Structures are given as C-alpha cells and as structure tokens.
Length: 477
Image (tube, rainbow, N blue to C red):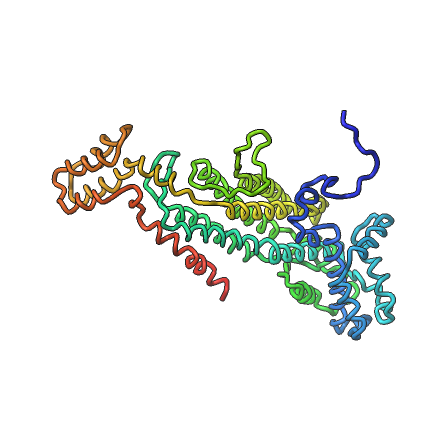
C-alpha cells in the first residue's frame, strides 16, 4: 500500500482531479478567467450591473431614474473589474443561501449600497429576473469571449501552419496510397493543402454562429415585468438589452434560452477537430514511413527503456485530446437542447462543463502546432518509394493509349502490372512495344517517371493561401 496524505489538499497541478486544472493548467490559462467558477460569477455580476443600468433608461420605470456619473462609474467598475476576492465573497454568501445567483444579488447589493443613489434602488437589482435570465447571458458572454479571444485565434494558427507546410513542400513529390496501396503520385504540399482548406471551411462556419440570449422572466412571457410596469414594451426592452451585450436576441424561449446555438458551436468545433484528427493520423503515418523526421530536443526522452526513440508524441497527444473534446461536446450538443416542459435542471450541471471540450481542443491545437514545428522533410525515403513504384505509370500510359485508339489499353496494362514487379526498364520496354502509338507519344511517355507524374499538385499547394482568402472573403466584407 502507498501512504496517502490525509485531510484537505490545496488545489495545485499535483492535486487537481482533472488535467485541465492540473498537469495542463498552464497551457489553458486564458480559459480560466472565462470558464472557472470565478469566470461564471464575474459574468453574472456584469449582467446584473448592465440590467440595472438598462432599467434606468426606461422612462416608465420612474423609480429607477437616469443614473448619475458616480453611480454609473461604480456599476461599470463592478461589471469590468470584479476580482477573485470579490467572487470569494459570493461563495461565502452562497454557503448560507445555497443558491448561487441569489448570492450574487446579495453581494452586489452590499457593494453598491455605499452609493446613496444606488442604495435607493437596491431592490431593482435582479428586477423581474429568473436566475436563467442571468445565467443564459453569462454563458453566452463566456462562449463569445472564449471563441473570439482564445479558440479561433489558435485555430487560425493551425490553419496557417499547415498552409505554410503545404507551400514549403509544394514541389516535393510523394507516392499516394489509396486503400493502403500505391496510387498515382502527388506532392507532400498538396496533401497538406487539403487539410488546410478543410479546416478553413469549418473555421468559417464556426465564426458565423452567434450566441443567443433572453431576458424574458420565469417562463419566457415577461409575466413579472408586465405586472409591475404594464405600459412598458418589455419584449422590445429585452431585445435592446440583450443585443447591447453583443448577443443575438432569441424572441421565443421558456425559462431557459434553449441552448441550440451552443449545440451548433460544439458540433462545428467537433467537425474542425475531426478533420484535425485525420491530419494527426496522416502525419503520424508519414513519420512512420520515414517521410518526415522530427527535430530532437536536448534533454527530451522518447522511451524509458529504448534510448533511440523520437516518438510523434505531439500528434498523439493532439489526437487524444481531440477525442476527449469531441466526446464531451457531443454529449453537450445532444443534451442541452432538451429540457422538459418549460425547464428542468439537467442542463445546469452540464453547463458547468462548458469549457471542458474547448479546453481539450485548445490543448490539441497547441500540441499540433508543436508537432508541426518539429517536422523535417526526409526527401530520400520519398524518392525511394517513388522509384520503387513504376507501376503507377500504368494510369497515364493507358490513358494516352485511349487517346490514340489503341485497343484494350486498360486490359493490357492490367495484365502487365497487376501482381508483377515493374521497374523503369520494363515499363519503358512496354511503351516501346505498343503498336499503333505515334512515336511522339512514345517519346513523351518515356520522359515520365513516378516523381514527375504529379498533375497540378504543386500548383494547388502553392495556391492554398489564396484559396483560403477567397473562402473568407464574403465574411470580411
């Protein structure tokens, strides 16, 4: 038995239950102020402050007159500079209330009561709100800040890195493999450009998905609002308020905003991640074939028992984290849009994990970038594989034979190549023996080699950044 330290353990990278807060905590630091308990409280406070400020702009709500400079400044400061120490006050109050949003309301009231103007309108903090009015807007703001500030910029780095890899290796010929068997040659750069473009398409779609929000009360009908101020167009005021936060307004809701947009975001990020898994596995395989070498780093160990090992750990870590991310986001995308009648509480505990899938995604993107940065193209193995695969020229030869009406071109090449060893000499002898093929066509085919038979692969690879710019063009207008 191993002795275990008894009692409470302070949270650290050694004691955290999950790796995002432990081993990998330093790598996802930008998400901590967004998706942590502190982050959620911070956004809740911001929503409460902004709602109180908005009430002061509604003429019919005479009890909340236009706020003076000092009162507005205090609310602005709380909305933008709420500290971890402030959040601890909320947690202390929650121990009594056993209700997290009510604890925010009480602490906020205490903090603004020092201002005489705000003290007179304390009971308009959280006015006509259900907890989900505050929570849904907080979650929307969390996702907006995380996607715009943390996730999309690193996605862009991944796309840029793969695009650069494509352009740098646009002219490096490589044997293709379909069904694991030799196939018509391509270039290393062109195959990288395929991934860059696929990822860019998904990134574009992710950026178009906007967070939605509501401020419609306990069941979405503004019941409490209208009981107090029946002459106010509360639906219009809700729209003004929600959109003032940079969030799309959802006019049809129950107690909760139905979370469809969260499912849309996670499904779209998962598609990006699935394509990146495909990339990780292909690069892993190219490393295994010897097409890529990896830069060695002094002091690093590849194996605890095999000193020679330089393992593709960055791509393996990337693939593993992408799998965890997608599993988490798939559950959330499938669960969150479902809520019994006007609301059940099953979404609440799930939403506590809003940052988990994105956190593991971010880890994967960082691992992928590290892996790409270590890659060195090994041209000798690439050339050797091509030179050992002259059978791939059966395709162009039979195609030229078709042009000149040579009978049964496919069948003749099939009989010559399938299951047989083919080299440069035997292939050229076959060409020389083709009846009814003009000499100039034979001369052209004799100039072919597997390394030269790459179609427009190099041109495609060199054009990848232009194609991505065209893809994004309508979004940037």
